[in-house]
Image (cartoon, rainbow, N blue to C red; front, top):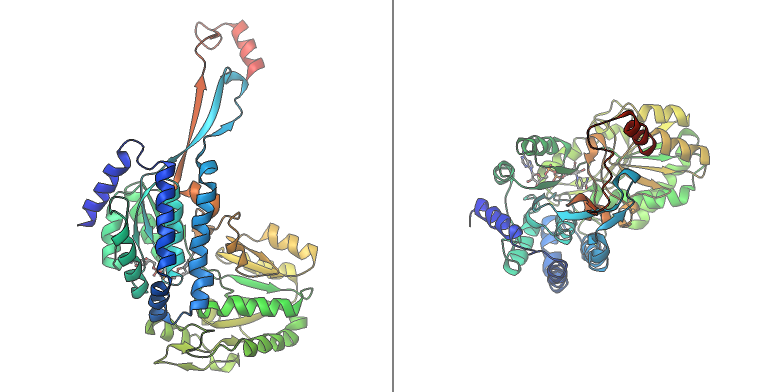
Length: 453
Ligand code: NAD
């Protein structure tokens, strides 16, 4: 069936009386849960074919993530969907006020390749929980996972409710001409702008989950062992192909030498070898070439080797980097870690304020003044103090960017809200109507109005 016809069928389906009630949503979320659990091996094989991601990483960062999402909504759907009673102001007495969460209708989710299951299915799960129909267009760059999702989902769900549409730029361009009730996009800032422009033509609301250069600040007051261990894990997970991965380090000058040695210790210990279960390869030749061109051989402190046919790049730490180096001009999105230094905490924050607002930022410090400056002066999507990436795993925290790293947010109740219209309703009683607001007006009425308002 043509995609226009599928969207039309979804529109018709979402208009029929009460089709997407809570029980229907729960039944379908449970069905999706079963589908994922019963096909874990198939899903793991597909992602392994795409970029050598191990079963361990696929379970921890993809499968368990989406299963937890489903469990969250199954558990909380009733309370999330319940009309929320709010106070009614004096001039609207006697009455009561409620906010109703209404499904938006038909949602288009456009996914990225780097966490292909999580970034496609997590928004879909939130959208279905909120009572919508969905079309998912996963990234064609991770072709095997795209095909795996399309095969499983399209065989199990009717297309007028949920459909996976395979395709690349051409197909996405066609999709973007259609009128959806919301577009949820994960990907680069460059393509985010294309999506935003296309959505504007139909006045379609968007959530844009984009990227950016996420810094990690290591202060002289940090626990260096813990910092190094957590940073190395977060940076080289998925071979650095993570939107919230530490992009570069800002290390206090006084601890630079000591910290580099600890970084090396953990890189050695974690055994990031080619074709191993501990490490992923680069997604394709294009990204591989882009990344190796960013390695300045004169600045390699550690690593720097690569293997083209295997699309493997060693974890690489680069030192003596300054803001003008090519590696500091774009989001790295790979296993290269440039290290810059600073002397004065506030001046370093000032230099960050000159850059685009990143998706994430991380501070390692035990100093309360530094924490306060980091939180109050520096704007970024979200982050951690004394850790990296892990804020994503807390469903009680919203996830999203700010400025050029994106707009909108999701996860947990924020995901439910992202795919709902919050419809405010005031219900009045029909007796005891005072005449005070109706003409003819008088000075006496005005003085009463002034007291009430
Ligand atoms: P991308 O922008 O190249 O592609 C994302 C999606 O857009 C894909 O489905 C692709 O088919 C489609 N697309 C690509 N070019 C298009 C065009 N010209 N017109 C219409 N559609 C087009 O991004 P990517 O390479 O898949 O992912 C990497 C980027 O995504 C990085 O910048 C990363 O930081 C960001 N990212 C952000 C998040 C987040 O949650 N904020 C998560 C993962 C990745």
